[in-house]
Figure 1 (tube, rainbow over the protein chains, first blue to last red):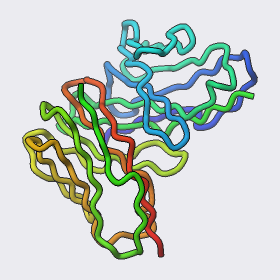
Figure 2 (figure 1 turned 45 degrees about the vertical axis):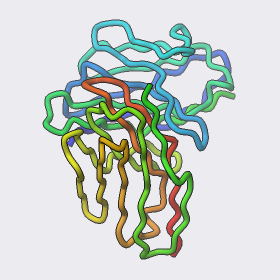
Figure 3 (figure 1 turned 180 degrees about the vertical axis):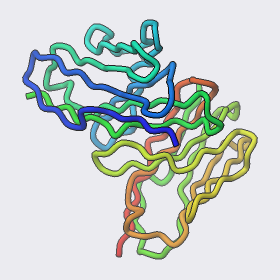
Length: 117
Length: 112
C-alpha cells in the first residue's frame, strides 16, 4: 500500500532558527499533500494544502511566511518553520493520497515532534 | 458547513468486550469516510475506508458501517485487546483532493 515517510521524527531547535520537515511519498506520486498540526490531546488542524509545482493553499489564520511549503516534485513536500518560537512547538503531520490507486484513502506520515527552546 | 462529531470522547472497557465507536456528520454529500487510529505521539494509521456508495467495510476484528442518509458511521471492535488502546479518529472527505473534515476522536483504553 501507499507509504508516506516523514523526517525528522523529532527535532529540538533554538528560538529564532528555522526547521525543515520533509514528507515523501515512497511508492506513489502525489500532486497534492496536506500539512497538519496537532496540539496535545487535540484533533488535527489542517495548516495548508501543498500543490506540486505551484503555491500552497493556506488555511485561515496560518501565516504563510512563517510556515513555508515547497512541493518541488511529485514525491516530496517540505514544511519549513521559519524563525521558530516556543509557541511553534507542536506535532506536525503530513498526508497524501495515491491518486492512481483504486484505494483512494489518505496515508499519513509518522509525524514530527518539534520542540523550540 | 460539514461538522463531524465523535461519541464518546473517551471509553474504558475490560479486555474481551465488543465495543462501538460513533461518528456523525451534518452534510450527507460525502465522497468517503475514513477511520484512523493514532497511538500517543505517533502518526495516523488508516483502519478502514468506506466509499459513499458502500454500507460497511471489514478488516479483521474491525467493522465500519456507513449510513449516509442519517449522517452516521460506526466502528465496531470485536473482542477488544489491550493493544487496541489508542485514539480513534473519523474523517469525512467531500471529494477528490478535498480536505478532510475531522472529528475530535475517541480515546479508548482496554484494560487487561
